[in-house]
Image (cartoon, rainbow, N blue to C red; front, side):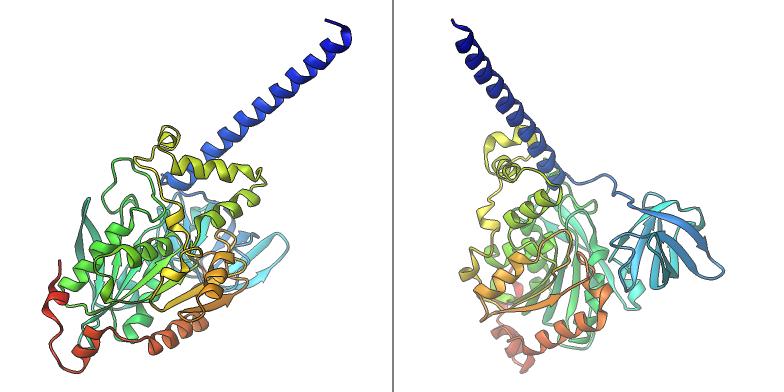
Length: 409
């Protein structure tokens, strides 16, 4: 073998080695990203540093971040989620710090806090809303799942709203929507679902991105129907949006669903994964490998999923023609976690049934916190225009609702 040939062969081997190393690196990153998406976190990252706390003045100084700079009212979790405070308006800010008012401390000693995280939850239980409520259990396929039932009282008892939280959070996330639905005459059922830390765990203890969680929402719909519901509005936040869309299209009780409200929703998981890959400045083909891990049976060896996920079934931009109920979408172009592109694409595809409320500045699931009046007004106006189901209209007119529909298990 001549010197030139040896050099050429060596170059080919070197190139193949680099390709192999790149493939291994891509696969490794893909597995890490996939597991980040579907493995329930044991602890949330505290990503905001506390500079100082002045309880006498009712002020807290935080490190300046995209979240801490946001106008509005927010929750602040600290001390590894053993402490919780509600923070109000910004009173001063610099390039490095933001000082906000402390509206109240619900848990823990905030004077000892060193780091924390800002969320949109704000309320911890329905008691914070000043309304009567009951703890109930929803009989899901995996066992009883706790829920809060906030009855409307003497109003139309056939109208129910079922509130479904997002990924890696719990029921309190959705409490912000309860007052506006209660004012509109709806009973509210605030539910938990598998692997959220309150409801029963699945055997694999993995999120299914809505592809299996919808069964627990379906059980909540059945509970509502069994307790007199003739009209149900599904309210989904973030991954909860993906979940309620699955319930709408797969539930045996879909005839009582009158409409869907989506807050910062995942309408298309491919678009959400693309955004996260770009945000982390990863190679674009990482997303393709992540999808393969979710879709293929062999992927369970890396992800821990018991069964493959039907990613195509989770894309409601492509499936837009299958939707047949009014949908209200509230999303911010500055979401920062789930892009609004798919939400806008759904609105463009189905302008006949989709009402799109476009926000800016507000970040993921923090639209209420940023502009409560506009957020509540959009839902109030949409509910006022919402056509009633046949059974609901009959009940409102004083007729007995169809027994089979009302009592269906």
